[in-house]
Image 1 (cartoon, rainbow, N blue to C red):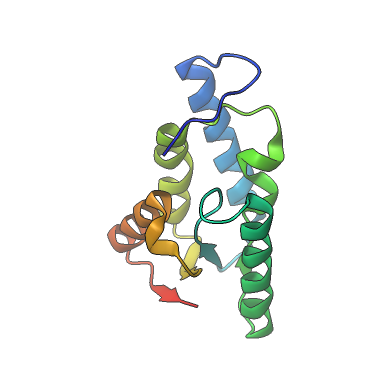
Image 2: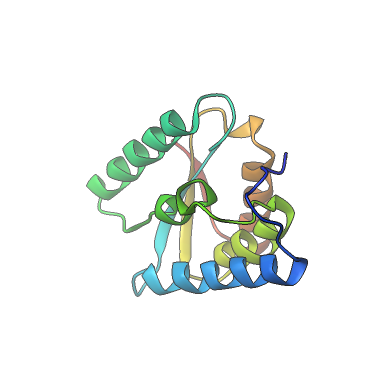
Length: 136
């Protein structure tokens, strides 16, 4: 994955702290008993805004089926503005522990998920944690 340039340089420690704090915020928003999570490409294949709409539609569909859903969109780098955009650290410090926290009960894949290196990593985290993965 490509690193996106930001307005300032982030040290490795600042980047790790940023994603650690983001993880803490995310875990606090997940309801008791856990939640499902939608996975898929965010910044490839289509413009990010189109991908985000696919995420929202999938989340709505899952909620209509009675699932509680963790919405990661409000805390994505793209939305947060000033962020380090360090994908390697983001996946190791944020996504891996999030998925393996016990609070994510299932993951649901958007179309074209196989084209996303990030989504493929998230699926590996799911496998390691025993989190079921479903295609939408």
